[in-house]
Amino acid sequence: MQGKGMTGELTRKIIHIDMDCFYASIEMRDNPQLQGKPVAVGGLPTERGVLSTCNYEARKFGLHSAMPTALALKKCPQLILRPVNMPLYRQVSQQILQIFHEYTPIVEPLSLDEAYLDVTNVKAYRGSATWIAQSIRQRIFQTTGLTASAGVAPLKFLAKIASDQNKPNGLFVIRPEDVEAFIHGLPLKKIPSVGKVTERKLHELGLYTCADIQQQTLLFLQHHFGKLGSRIWQFSHGKDPRAVQPQRERKSVGVERTVIQDFATLNQAEPLLERLFELLKQRLARTCPTIPLQQLHRLSVKLKFDDFQQTTVEKSHLDFNLASFQHLLTQAWLRCNNRAVRLIGLQVQLPHQKSMPHQLSLWD
Image (tube, rainbow, N blue to C red; front, side, top):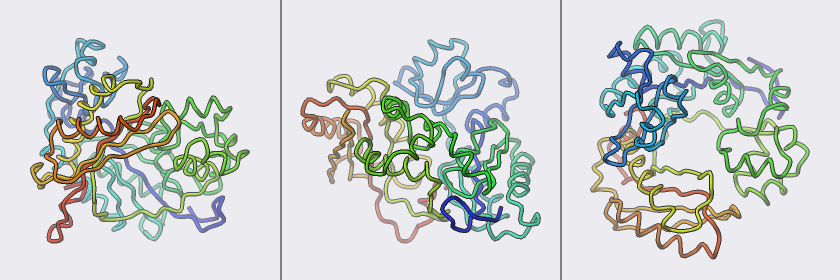
């Protein structure tokens, strides 16, 4: 994959690997009787739990990650719910990480089941990123019994989009000479960070594909979408200078959700806050399992309003519990000024740990 991209820069060879229904697939691997049945991993409905992931059989019923378990069971009464087994999932992810490093040292994990790899200078397989991606997928299956999907492209965001093209257990390649045509017809909902609410707003402006964005100015996108507008404009023009960054040290962990229908009152938002708090605990367990929750004291709540402006309330010396986040949400809500809320986010700053940098890896 050599050549020139839309920006005229020398292209890179980037692979995005995304495991297929990772948690649920591990559960099905270890319990073959679950094969062919709707399976989800998540918390109990009696504890206001949410789904961490579900297999494709469950998705046929409209189930998805972050859905309240109680709602999932209503939609699919025959759902087989498995508890989260984070030590097992971390163990398997370590096996996968070791496989990645057999091919390249430039690996950027995004989560337990997802990573970027830069193979630009890899000489094996005649330097073919496509062959390397295929070999990685085969090695993962041979080692773990799990399937992975891969995307190959010269830009990071395109590699991520490509890995979703032929899921599950698929491979999709976007060659440098095909980038311009691929982006031209790309639906905007495919761009990372464009959720349902942003997509609806784009449609209201008559924008459906990257080709439509290419007819607009950067200032127009920034006016309507702020910082996200800049990213949408850049991606729609084939611009993504981000390099694959190995061994990133995490400084914070957060979760956020854009709601389908804006919240007008604080009472409407509180159930989502509770679900986000559970998701944040799960993400902390994945990303930094060695840090006790009692050491986390710098918390923040973010709100994005229906005019795409946002505010963040952050405080130190708080206990990591639901009550603290409820307090921050109440303070943030005072800034609504009659605006509805379209997004809620929770974040916690991680304590500085010089002596244990690798413990902040998403794969640890």
